[in-house]
Amino acid sequence: MQKRSLVRIIPAVALLMLVAACSSNSSSSSAAKSSTTSPTASATSAASGITQIQIGKLNFDMSKYCGTKPFTLGILDGYGGNTWAVEKRAMLTKLAKSCPNNTKVLYFDANGDVQKYISTVNSWAAQGVNLIETFDLFGQPPVSAFTKAQAAGVLIGTGNGIPGDAKVPTDVTAAVVPDFEKQAVQWVSFFTKATNNKGRIALIGGPAGNLFDRPAIEAIKKAIVDQGSGITLAVAEPQVGNWDPATTQQVMTGLLQKDSHIDGVLLTYTATGPAILRAYKAAGLPFPAIAGQSSSNELVCLTESTRKTDPNFQVMSLDGSANLDAIALAKIFAAFQGIAAPELGPTDQSLVVTMATYIDTLSGIMPPCDSTLPPGADLSTALTVAEIKAAIG
Image 1 (tube, rainbow, N blue to C red):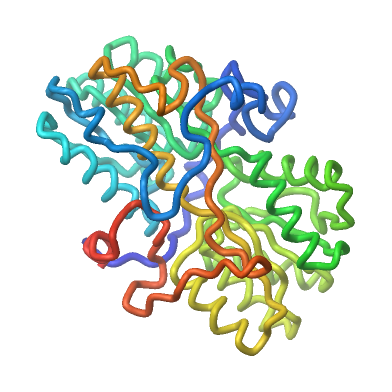
Image 2 (image 1 turned 90 degrees about the vertical axis):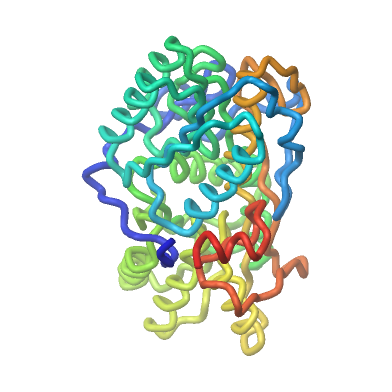
């Protein structure tokens, strides 16, 4: 497989999507119903199952859900052109092929094109694919295709994002959703300490309308109030960085030209953190505190080296996000095979999970830099180092 960089720019024209509303057991976005944060705490507490992701490993044994009925799996990415997606695909393929009754694993990268994404769901359903596990980048637009596919007997599992207003188990069989509220509590606590309770924060994320930025910034606003924090938002809206280093650097540079007093940057893809440092260095400003989710080997190595000369530089990242898709895969496996799996969470609502703290310099949590791995490698995925090298090498 061709070696890939951290992220390529996602075509904006293909990403005219709605900010997703949560399923019936969750809060919706403020643009739709009531909140843009996450499914409600009551839904989380009412359901058993996994609530906390682990770093570099899974919370379950996939062999328990293989069953005996033959199956064909389709792995569908709304956008698969980054190292995170490459590793996720390798992990899901490995899990599927570990089951002796797997007949085939298909893969498609919609590359940010919602029409190609929907067409693939329809095509796979017509071809007789039994299971589809997907990172649904688009939110609401594909929901009707999911519903039709499920009516035709295809089980859909979504991981790491809110699939519009899709209901579990009718529109999708499984949805594994990040707990934005809990993550925001951690981020705000970090920024409050890192900036001495007076920081001004900006959020730079992915493409316009993606499934993370709006819920994240609304959850941040709520957590600031709930904690009585003195930090404030330097810009009230998420800034479109396309989850791409070059675009993120350009956006950060533009923000600093207007306001040189931004003390912290929240990234919904912390792998773009090095781009933030380049922007501040070019502007001749001290580095900000950085927090967010989904880091990379490059960020780990750069944090380690930077703190040797600037011990006040602080970074925090929640990781293991690709493992949410593995849980969604296990849930649709179990459903297809008729295996009861309460340990994987509810079958009639979304499973809400929190990612693990991978980097937190304030708490002394710092993974080692691995100079043998490519910069974009994500060591929080449930793959061995050898498997990561094989996937992205």
